[in-house]
Amino acid sequence: MTIGLLGDAGKLTLGMDHLSGSPLSGKQMFGMVMDHFGDGVKRIEGNWPYGDNLAAFNRSATGGTPLKTAARGTWTGQRAAEYGFTSGRITRAIPSLRVVP
Image (cartoon, rainbow, N blue to C red):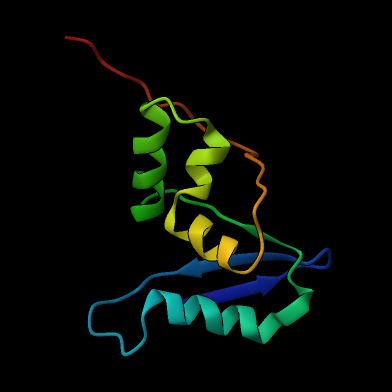
């Protein structure tokens, strides 16, 4: 399932969930959205409350990677780079609470 919304300022908000058995890969779905909106996409917004992007981001960030670099290393960051989006901005990151026994 893929949902893409293009805002007035060219901000693409994309929601994707690659379901088992889907005839399309996630990369194909991303490409279809980018092809649909074309040059209207000026920036891509990633919201990761759960899932693979968040897990990859957290692994990198907790390993000492700067947040922007960690975001670029996610699946979405890599797809965005394929379309020429190479800079990023972290608008909100919520640190986790750690319980020490």
